Length: 147
Image: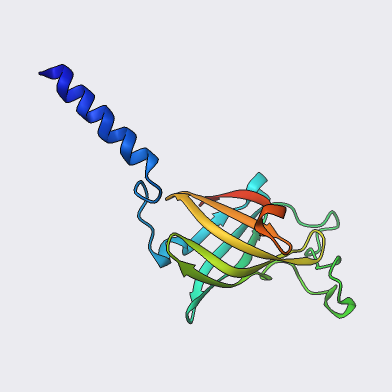
């Protein structure tokens, strides 16, 4: 009898792991909160703004060597190169669709460029951030952790 129960449980567990979306039920506001970027260099606060989700840079691990605030020195627009990076809007325009957030943009102050982006929760504390140009297959994924 115990063998039958063990096999039944293992079969059920296997089926649950193989079905997409069954393991983690995601709702639109699950993304709201503070996230630590890959490498722990910064924190991004994600919030809902109207019907979209946005994120701003709220903490930096290291200021400039001279102690002055870091500025957006790599921005392609010369007029924006003196704006502080802290408080900068990094994520814009995300909409929730099924189990992920899409149609957004991410700004990378390290290279001064904006990329198309999608976001997906792997679990309650892990967010996959995929930035790309033209096609998600041609992008890069970072893993952020909930603070």
